[in-house]
Image (cartoon, rainbow, N blue to C red; front, side, top):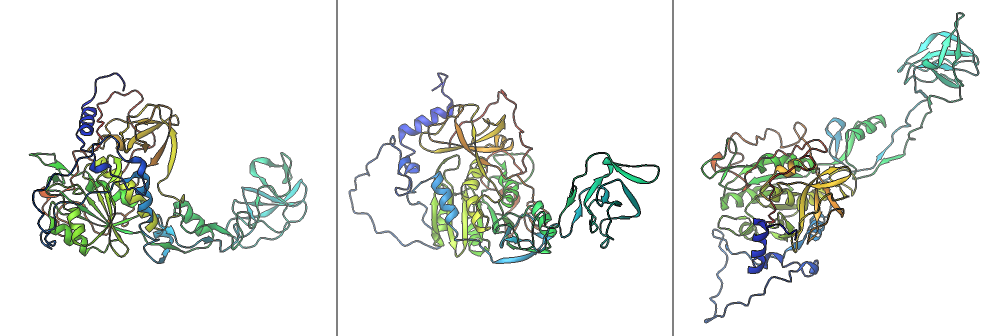
Length: 525
């Protein structure tokens, strides 16, 4: 305690613990995470029964049971590990991709040099190729890049040469233009000592034909494209990006204009497709379904995507249809609730052979938490990315300021990096995006919180803007009308709270300045 008056969030938390409301969401998997069981939530005895219970009716295809089974909340580290193991490997066979289409894909075979680099002795500088010691007689011809094999130079002879041109036979060095001068007789003199082999890139200096350049699972970056081209490749063997569909749920969301009459703007519809693309997916559709159980059922059962991402509807309210729909189709729940704040109602399910569904909470920051907790590890496996080869990473940084923790659960808190320290940002409530929009990462705060100076794990944020034709799928409009059978705009949405976000982050270091006083939110739900 700080000695200051308790905030509303702290009072809410205390009341929730006293009343035992967190008992259900803190029953962790006994085999994976017994250390996180709640010791403070009271155990309530079941009510006495005065008559035998009536036999349960079989579930109806049109009216699925509305009361969910008790959840076995999974610890945050265990949930991420389970998501990474949910798929046995890349979800697609390797394909040969032209270099200009391979950016952002994952190598399905090692990159091996097809030639020596450089493939001939090359001048590293503009100047003269010289033979033996000077001074030298300068030939009237010159050697440019791309020209055929030049004539040899003799001792005491020099020839003008351009960067990248082939070194003539018997040349001993390249004298840079700024290191030589010619006299009135046209003879070349060195202004400093000339060392044999200087400014010559010998054949095979970078690699020899057959050398292993990059492993399977490496991310194809712009530099990798350049290396592949230099090494002789026209195409690359790569894993296709996993296909993803976004199902936007909720009747309360608007797709444009200002919030009005109890309706709010959808923040997740604009944010999730580019973020999923940054995590390695190809988003093929964004469907706005509203709070319609049948539309959700049809969307899931008709989808051919490797990953379906739903927004909102993962709790147990009257219009939370995700759990009933998953039970109705016989899906296998792999993660049903995670001991993390915000975002604990998230889920991961296997809905078919090689097909998965990640259910995100409706609040924007809670959805980000679910995306990085469950979708990122799953997409890493589905895309074939090797550990440590591209993609979002984790690192550690000391806290500049202390962070309040949840009594039992992990917290993910937006932070900005300042002088190699993680500065917790305000506006970090589950319905807020202002903090994450200015963040460099999410600090992983253990139960109970962390003092200033403590080293914490930080999740890197994969900010990116999709390339043309590879982000949200060809001809898929995010807004402007129903998509793939979605409902009207005024009733569409994701259950996201008030706020907007684009997934395209600021430059590194953006955020409130040190010492900024802002009215943040410290709720954990």
